[in-house]
Image 1 (cartoon, helix red, strand yellow):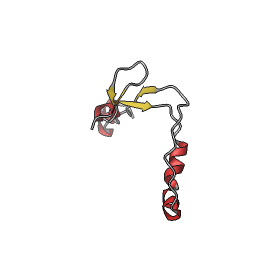
Image 2 (image 1 turned 30 degrees about the vertical axis):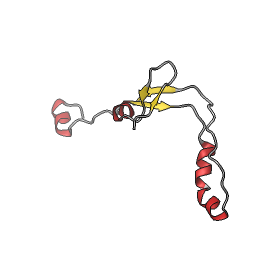
Image 3 (image 1 turned 135 degrees about the horizontal axis):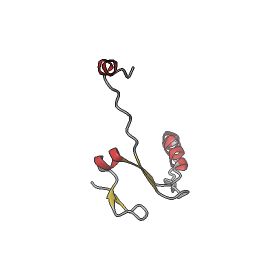
Image 4 (image 1 turned 60 degrees about the vertical axis):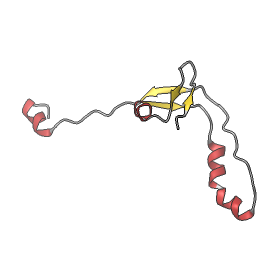
Length: 86
């Protein structure tokens, strides 16, 4: 199921799309610390019988979309020796 979001001045994009995830890094600017701690305490809540709803993730920074930097492809050692690069 596509997850369409409007991120800042950008048009709606499907952030779960494989091409989007492979080409850009999307930071939604939310602080997910309380949600992570809530998930870590899941079994404790189940054993004690507590029912605490999932906390919100407050927005602490603007949305950032950055391109993923591709690593440099390493050349073949034989070719590098032939051209004197090594």
